[in-house]
Image (cartoon, rainbow, N blue to C red; front, top):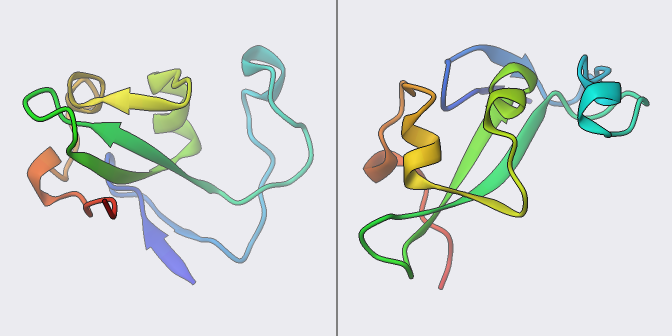
Length: 91
């Protein structure tokens, strides 16, 4: 299934595994994994407003997320998808 990175727009086939190029640097697994990562993103205005961001390896590496990122962190990528157009997380 092809999917676009919501930050940079690159399209990847999620059924084809890839090796994360920053595995050693970021302390992640060196085995092939899904080429996209899903992260929760919390609004700066409404603390209960979480969105789901899907990013490629390059954008994930720029974020350095812990368990989630902030809206400000998302905006730092200069994303093609603004925060208010990201899919909402169920409450």
